[in-house]
Length: 168
Image (cartoon, rainbow, N blue to C red):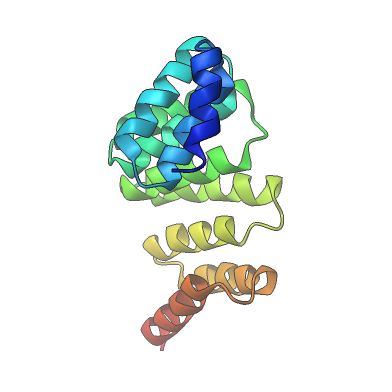
């Protein structure tokens, strides 16, 4: 809630400030208030329709709300505007994985990992996509890479144990 105070002041002073609306949406998203976050990001996107990071963040909110087709469309629009957004590729990969399209998800997570070579999260996502395709060895390789980047990554550690049991 504290993060919202300066943003609310800024929006009151400059209601057409797309960045303030977007950052307010970001704060609301991380506070678990996705519907309100979406309203702010819709406002930001209307004010700055070419801002790829706003479209990507909007896609993440739609993913969290379970609106997979809308999330994928928003993330694809963001990536058409800026192909260097590792997060947008990763979020689209999560969207595609949730929609039951692991091959497409794997391509997105691979793109995210290439753009952000220190991203344990992208490797975890690619591992999930590969595991969904029955490619356990490749999934374990990705998870080990994720743990090499971030040794305390508990979800990766849990997935290694889970996939290793299934492979035995």
